[in-house]
Amino acid sequence: MKVITFFNHAGGVGKSSSARDIGFTLGRRGFRVLLIDADPQANLTDWLGVRQLNAPGGTLREIELEDTLYPAVIAEDDADLALPAPVAVHGVHLIPGHLDVATIEPMLPGQLMGVLRLKEALQPLAGQYDFVLIDPPPSLGQLSALAVMAAQYVVVPAPASGKGLKGLSTVVQMLGRFRKANPGLKMAMILITQYNDTTNHSRESLAQLRAQFGHLAPISTPLTYRPALYPDSQLHGEPLPEFARRSPAAQEIETVTSQLLEALGVPARV
Ligand SMILES: Nc1ncnc2c1ncn2[C@@H]1O[C@H](COP(=O)(O)OP(=O)(O)OP(=O)(O)O)[C@@H](O)[C@H]1O
Ligand SMILES: [Mg+2]
Image (cartoon, rainbow, N blue to C red; front, side, top):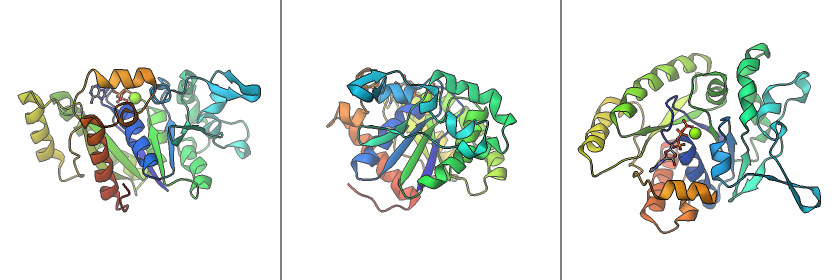
């Protein structure tokens, strides 16, 4: 089981979109995938179309805090710590997010070994999944720390822009710090997102990004900026490769998924 956190403290860089689409693609290729929405914004959950859960008697109910990662990390009695049963959706499993996951932030430091709790909660699932993909919020707070401490790998989504480049230096610095507590942590890939090949700015930023960071991790081929497609797929609650099956955008996601598998040394499945 490979645990991969989509990490970048910068907001809006494509963490949730790429966790959704790469997770889905891995699932469609026959890998057993668990997605964990560790962001109180719960975008990953919403964009997979999980807005309510099935309840007994064929009815629907609201998502509650007990359905999220919360019970795995916050408990009065440590013996009870465990992830809840996941939701099955689009060929993968999901631990959904919820606005009140934010309450973990102030409470975690008061928990014994709090920041390692997600890692511990995942251990019993090792035989059940090939991949666990974690989507943290855009911050360097406790939820992000929890997500990065649980992982063996990070994928770092970064837009091909000046802002993307600037943020990457801090990401690299932070990963250095996280490695002190999680020495095996590897940067599996820098995933280029929101690439606009009609602008010099995007092209130049990508060239600079390769020059500055290419020695630290494989750099993916770019995911193109497609302002019409992404919001539509979110509205429909479908991963982009399902929403727009034979589109060039879906092909790009196939390609970066294969690149990720190669970076991880996992034999590809088509
Ligand atoms: N390739 C793309 N083309 C167009 N829009 C995109 C693309 N990738 C992501 N977006 C849009 O950019 C916004 C930010 O993407 P996303 O939410 O995936 O980033 P994030 O890093 O998870 O953000 P946050 O930090 O808020 O969690 C979203 O509205 C998404 O639809
Ligand atoms: Mg997000």
